[in-house]
Length: 414
Image (cartoon, rainbow, N blue to C red):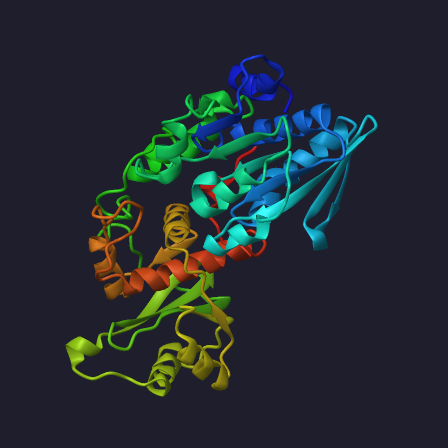
């Protein structure tokens, strides 16, 4: 980065001014420059104001925190003369500058149990990256740890729904909480060219467009994959030799079971065939052993690299392993999984074939549940949608070094 926008400059300097803010909140569009400028400002503030103190750096996971923030920020700090030493085994970053030294502890706020990880720490400040993706208990525990005089809170996130607790409790109440609130758009990031901005705008539609491009806290409604036309967009199974095979599985006994067979060709993964069994419609449930044989039939002699299975299907996972299949438990984060699946479908990294009728049938009716106060699809006709999501999360995790997250939406830099 060679220059900063006016809004980024405000992020960099807010703590130098006499307004007496206790916190800063930056939200808005993806790729708007908020994460990098906030991270840089956080370290500049910590090293200018404190010595021999502890600080918290929080992400949804430590892996996403390193990827989204530290990978680009640490080389920049080192170029400014900061000495940064990270102990990955301890999730600890020690920073020295002009005779001062502070410790930065790395935390992941993935679920409700994460609050216990930060409990007991005494912090002079905390930066929460992707705050809206963290449970409230973790965020509140992180804030409560900041008991050192002069400590401040730093939040950034992309929008979610308007009923989200962080929007209701922090953004709408920013002034009474003495928090400086800054809303970012892509135009606030001078590093983005018009062509790159256009690429991001074309990557989203519907709810995701309003959130990640316009930066609005808007409710999810309508079809989940509203950009995908089940009549227009599927393809025929391509000719050629597939270089690899994988299977995604949503397991069901009383509920339907759905298996997707995926083949890799020319860098894309095609859902070439599928298996779908609805015991209620047939009138007979199947055993784990019978499902294993059905999987063998679907594979027809092909050797899959792995079988990605609903993690709650413990007995079926064991049955598959006893049968010699390489099994990977799926990442069952629904919200992130939908974002990842939408991105991979739009980029044609995963392609549905016309032969997969049950997947396409569910795609046409897979809708958001507007009766809930958080993003969630209706739990109706969603079994092929679940196995599709498992496959997408596994592929995204592979591409991004082991953590499956909505990496296009969430990754932010200067």
